[in-house]
Length: 291
Image (tube, rainbow, N blue to C red):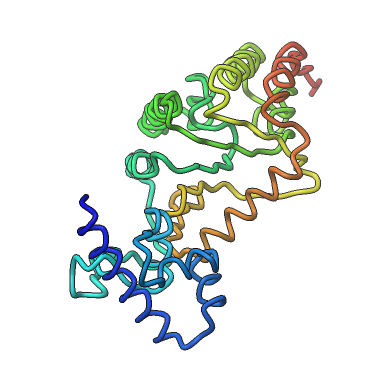
């Protein structure tokens, strides 16, 4: 882009940012906080002598917060709101017939270059063995189990990319129950449980630092399964459907919740692999209870 083009683009963006600010009729500091900008950054964008432009993430934040398109902010269209370009704050996406796995693959692809924050339902998809996937979905749901296994492989390939930045946070009790064969794992063979933990420990160490696993104490903190795909969207897993969050405010709230789990984690990425290995070594057959 030439210097002239950049000046023209900055001038259009400055004009439209100023229009949004005037419409709100609120102090610049409050506007900046609401759309996710630093006060100093907003000042630079409004400075008539500056050609500074926001990063893509910040541009998307402004567009979402103000209900306009990024194309309008950049002067590429005269239409502020194009229904095809602006997603509603909340959406419902169903997961039947592999549709959920297709959605997840698309959302991961669109989030390349952003940090992904992931709270799994049980064992993270990309760390599951085939035996555990089959056990969780059962013989009557073989098609769904196959789709989940394929999703896990795609996520694993995604995580091996050098540009990946993924954090996973889960209760340590989920893995302890797996080692003990208690709760939902009570009918899973000890060899399969041990193999799952060994497989998970290897991958946690292999994928570090682009993939980082944090374990928190589920007795003190709670998190429903969800994924934050950078600044673009978040998805809460509800079993047969996803509740998809598109609003900047709600995505930030989930991000803060996730970061709070990390701050309170009892085991970080530097110790998670060793802890899982220790759990694998201590896997025992569950005693048979006399009837």
